[in-house]
Length: 600
Image (tube, rainbow, N blue to C red):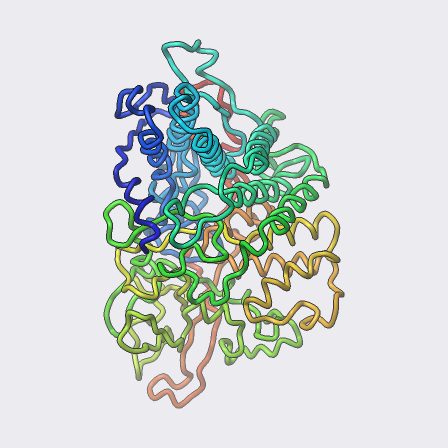
């Protein structure tokens, strides 16, 4: 924990500024310019203010609630959004934002406040360059270029083309033509981001990795820049955007201009090749420095922060105001050892649970898997036991005095406080809770202090495997997938499937399943549904939980029945326009050059 004290202490010293208008054109430095930029220490205060705006997982309504993986309950924006209620006026034009602290990376206004801070920093350190050492200047400039790309990428993934600003807007010196600009295309935004990140990596000024104990852990690194570049390229190469008709333009009456805002408007296989090459470059350059962490049940803890798999994260600190998250209070079993602890907002669906393989590495629907629908939790892969709390699951965290057994079944003889309930209480609505990312050492509270991981090595392996398979077929993909599978206790693909005999389509299915399981509840699934062009099919289907009951309920002398329970009262409406978010009405009325996304 001590490794975070230096960087976090500086973050706490920052006085933040904000503005409600996306066209933020006034400097809001809290110190006079000569003082603010007089030394490396003073300039670092400003930079750490930018870092402090990185999002925290403070929400009962994470991005996973907008997918088929989680059923979070009727109180939140995801419930409204899943009814198809998404317009430029709903919730101020942000129909997917429940809590700004967690999800305003998709807020036009907030992102441009952050972009302005980045551009001000770059402008001012150039003007006062004589005050700094060459090493400090080079490193800090590339850190801020990375942060700017990260902020732009978050918005780009949700709205398509953005307005690319590389200098602060200034009403006092700029014309209206310079102040009010049109959106850049999807492709122009992509080109800007990949060029910026590529230059940062090639410059080599940043560290490759910070480890536990490093005073600057949490700052941008070369590995973070290359990982972000590889992800952006994979996202853009995917069917949702790498197509003559991008997915957000399909059937929405999109104009030619709108088509270019939400995708490339053509297909090019080279985009897959580029994504494969970049993710392969990461594995070539940084393998060894980065590697898979062994025990995923221990991955999320304060003691294992900055472990060998973590590429970049958002530092948090337990029980320090402004640096904590209330994440743990929202997830995990509602009742533990008979005491109420959590809101029970993170309830895995049966659709997600079904994706976890058997311990022989085969999917549960494979004829040789050995899956028993009457004993569905037996002999599943280790990640199932590490990530999911199921009926009859042993539950023991380090902070608990003894082990609990979590029962979600309907049982009149031995009733459980965690029994499945489809109403509006806090207990599970699906028959499952999750365990992943819960603090093993401290009871659930709003003082959660485990860092929020943006990128980790397992994701890069999966990014490479997917891009390589799409660009060239499965022949060179086995090693990357096997590296992940064997680290998670599964046999190699060759052992499970009897050799290197998977077709491209079959390998795609394996990779997508591995991705869904490995990265579940890390807010990745939504982007996969969008870029794979599958959200319309997946999110218009009824989801399920697991209802477990005895055929002789008065004395439990009968058979325990496992019944897939339709979540029929839960909304599941997704329209084509919802692949991307709208531009808020207030933004468009402020700048008539901004074109709305298709369908809105």
